[in-house]
Image (tube, rainbow, N blue to C red; front, top):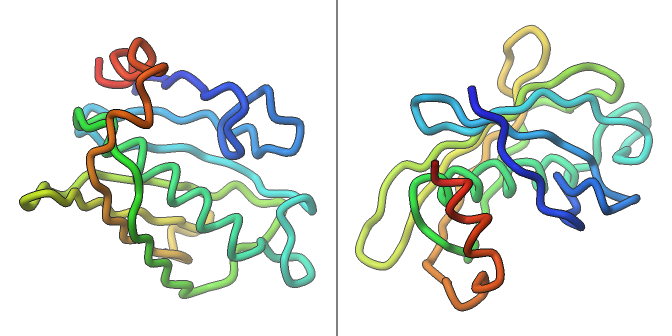
Length: 147
């Protein structure tokens, strides 16, 4: 696995964001993106459980990173999140994302959040479009994400 660079003030993986989650992402040899993270009361929704928005943010970042890793400077245009089980706070969860395909102008990715026992708690499906104009100042970082 290769550790991916953080995004400065990014809400999910930026160390410069004091309100962020501070996630470290890794790229696997198969192109998927992976992390293990323990959510805290900062990400709480229902008592003792993660807020659905925190789960969605993790999946958005994992899937988006997988799309970038596949060579596309893209932005999400549609994210679908299916909550199958609550995500408890204080336990290590696994988050993965993978690029699936490019179909005409759209890019597709899938993501999952798994509980410590391997149960899939949350599934994400993302649709992305290429938007290099949004990321022109990140060109050198984009090259790092692709390697």
